[in-house]
Image (tube, rainbow, N blue to C red; front, top):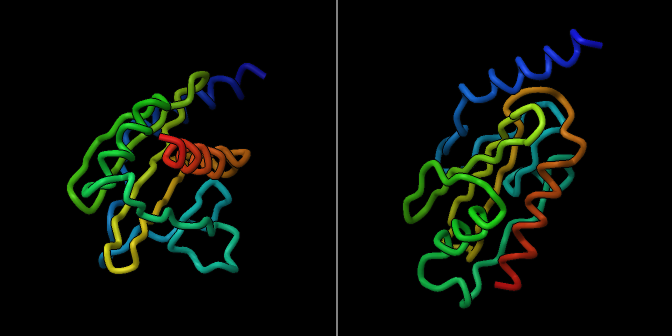
Length: 142
């Protein structure tokens, strides 16, 4: 049992050394073959698929500023942001696991694409999917 706890703490420390995947050919990076990632740019039939966010007038001219507010409200840290891309991290309380949450503005379709993924491990017990839906709900009410 002690070994398992030590291993989880070690994985948490290791996850601090990574960084967001960033953009690949203008899109968010594909999810790895693990259930601890969701992406609006995945195929709808893919288990990783999650709906993109609609850019609505209430978000103003710079929708990522609104996203940044919500991320910080939820305890996340925005690591990088420009007018079309935002990279943020959320760190779990117990073991310090780091998850990356990224957004990409697609002005042509009026959408904010999102990717949320754990840096280490295999399963996340749907933590990334739940976080994205929490962000969606807060964006709709703020």
